[in-house]
Length: 128
Image 1 (cartoon, helix red, strand yellow):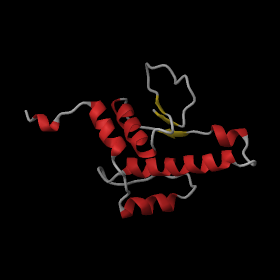
Image 2 (spheres, rainbow, N blue to C red):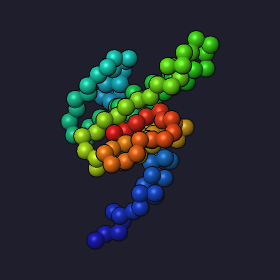
Image 3 (cartoon, helix red, strand yellow):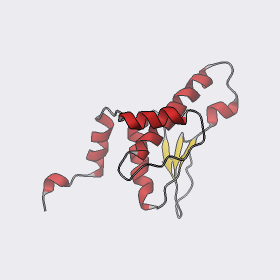
Image 4 (cartoon, rainbow, N blue to C red):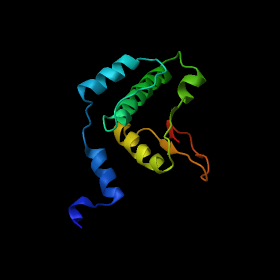
């Protein structure tokens, strides 16, 4: 067992928070193509689909903030949230951490899965 490969979730989360993330060119192209469309992204395993989705969510949250700051904002504009679905309960916390690391801690990323109570506070992103 090589201890260099094992570290706590807290230290990993701290590491992720301090990283400066950048999309690869093909990921940026995917985000740009999505625009404001409802889209399914099909990419190979390990190609960064989570980061494409996280960047799309981040851009949407920025737009929401701009709309909320304007006098044209409706209550729906300022209370909308993103839903990120995963196929297994084991992935909920992992994907929540990845999205939170990408979009920053200014936005609340909640998680929900069977057997848990629904989030009690308002969230910007729900991973389920």
